[in-house]
Length: 430
Image (cartoon, rainbow, N blue to C red):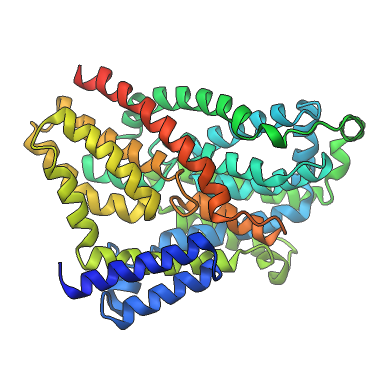
């Protein structure tokens, strides 16, 4: 590698260490790292801001911005208080039952929407219900972020890496349902059982709080029925457009921004109220992270790592699939899985063709998808949903540290990837 490439690796590792140790704020670390990458010419303005492969993913940024505005308007209606009381009453105030209910809803929604949109919608409900039951919100938020990444793996539209893979491999929505969804159902059942163990010390049942919740009428929480109706219509249209992405060919970011614009223009909500819930630090953090990772792509670092992992398997399909699965999980834990998959897809395409194209060789695409989607759970910066959850938690006075998330994420990723191994082997390689 060139001197610039080595410097880029050093800058990235330094910024990552600062984010992990929280010596300085993660936004400062990401922006500082991005600035140094530009300073040492590991990337330039064109590559950082305008290149689809190595630049800031503006689709992600504007998807987040649009959905944050929609959620901000929804919050004014009282719908989140309504859902919080409804969920607590269905769980009868029992913390574990409540977590199961929330993670199942999150996983199902993430299969239909993208996982970032799902956590933006479920997080406000979580804060409210935890406040009502005097429960710590952090364990519930962490579990929801992980459930969104697992559930999002089931469909083409559930996780951004799946969209990239589908485009490169020519896979359909139904292909993902047939090949990914069966294992995702199993993984969610296992994950629900793991939640009981991982978060058991946080499940404190308060009979008095539970009784107070059961006595509430959730309908009284709706503050503005007219605004709620308008908001739900816009949200429904946005969700339908997300699901119909393969047909309409509108990027989710475009749909989200259009929905936000229509909602603000068609209602009496002021601009100030609409943007009050926007997580600006989270958006800036993503921009810095994209520039840093893009610099690693631009200097060839990620490509070399991926290529080396592929060459190490010596052309054996089974070994290649397993190596790809574990390598993708490991690398997606360190860098965001979106640029990783964008970089790795051409390499996997070549491997698929070298192994006969269709048929058994297709297992390589599923290994890449499972590795990237599930590996995103390993650390706090492995997937977009994780970063969004951390930003929302900090904004609501319940900060979740990098290691608080990661100590659970590493366990969940290790278990889910281990369970993926026999699934891929028995279904495609045996």
